[in-house]
Length: 333
Image 1 (spheres, rainbow, N blue to C red):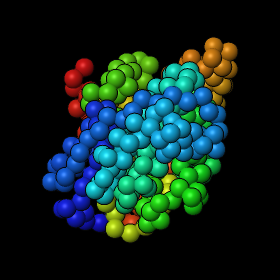
Image 2: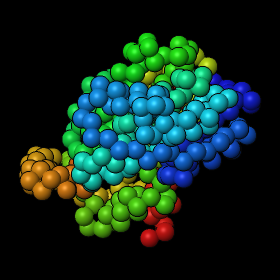
Image 3: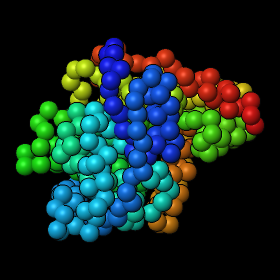
């Protein structure tokens, strides 16, 4: 396990949000110096990583970009910073495609990466989502992506544009700087609306899992994610470009039992899959309007396995905090 130097200077973008505020609290709890910055609001109609990279490069040319002031503000804020955490973005799994969604989740990471390089930031930690791998039965740290919604497509573009920029030797002002993308899983928190909804369903007759009910689930805790973000940002050695938030060890039955205080109903797996397929078909006809809700049902029933990755290899696995978190939430209903 790494130990971060007490002189390290951190900056968190999106510090007022769900993940960003938890990362700031974790940093301050360790006595580290941390600054916060509101992220600029960007828009983009780009549909490819290359187009996003080209658009981001315009930010570095003051005479060519209407948003040069935003880039200049980032450069000034990043001056003297060791680690930047990008927790900004739009967490809108049910939203349709829009310039604001692409701007926040795909163009913004690219602009931040260019500014971090130019300012000599040692490490940029970008928060992505395991949803970029969609319905795959096993999620991992590979560049294989299978987005299934507007939100997951925007997060996919965010990962891909960082890969494009990483190979851009012209833009690489500081060759020693690194960009680390963390794929967060299904993160829960005591005040998050999705967590409260999960607890209500878990305590209702609708609580159910696909047989046999032992499938692993990527449901995780905000405290463990914040801990992992700081550890990855402070790690003294090499960190891969893509890392997955470590599994916290629960099955689909464990999650519902903790959140609802009762054992869920077990229904045949063969019945769950056609129900979900039909639901996604109808949602597709409605412009993917129901994709977010269906995905939550899919995770509740079938879960999703994840391959152990870099965190397990180097021993950066936080103590599991998801079960007590869900149990606390259940007591508030």
